[in-house]
Length: 325
Image 1 (cartoon, rainbow, N blue to C red):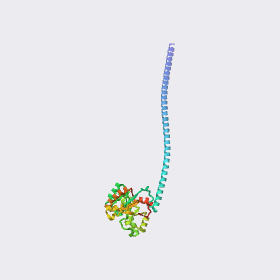
Image 2: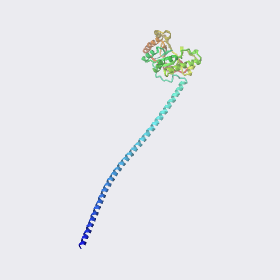
Image 3: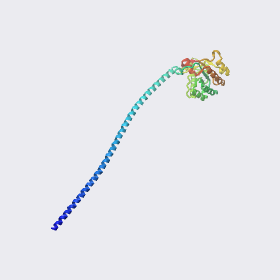
């Protein structure tokens, strides 16, 4: 009986131990499951937060894409506007070029000066012209003209233009008018047609090269001598013959007082509105006299103009091959 009782006790103890162990294992399993579940929840929360951040980034990128698309639309619109403006300007430029070509054609067909607009005519005008230069006194003359703010017309010899290019450049840059007085002061009417044309063309080229761009349209033949042959040459080259209305005879007297008498006290031949005065910048006495006559004429209300301006106002311009004095 005691053996049976002891055996039962052992069995009960074993069962109790088994139950304890089973309970402990179950509790541990629950604990592990709870721990794992908590970790999973944390991971799920992190994933949710990450997903929210990524959604926000995607939304931001979509907004930026929309902004760029809007900017592209604006840029395209502005590009179209600019292209239209460019096309309009190109059309206007083409029209201007066409008008200039038409104007050049009109000038080439005979109107040397009349297409230029010089503004309203002053009340009393006079043109001061100098022949045969430039020379050793021309530099001083240019200084005096600059100081007095007077523009003159210089009828230049081609061989002297080659000798004094710096003076031709000054004339051109300072706004004076440059005309063609032949290459070497030869009498053009005594030459053949070809020789006379070559002489004037050679002089014109020398003036252009020396001055840096002056293209003389006014021709004053030496001694004022011209004929049908010379007019034909001028007409073919779109030049006109510009003479004078008052010869100061400075070349003859070489005297300042005598020059002033010719200008102011020579009866019907004295200076008047629209006069073209003939002088020479190769004589010192002419430079001295010109300064005094400028002062006196300005006091009398005269405005000094270039020959092309005077011909514009008083002749309506100058035709190719025409003669004007």
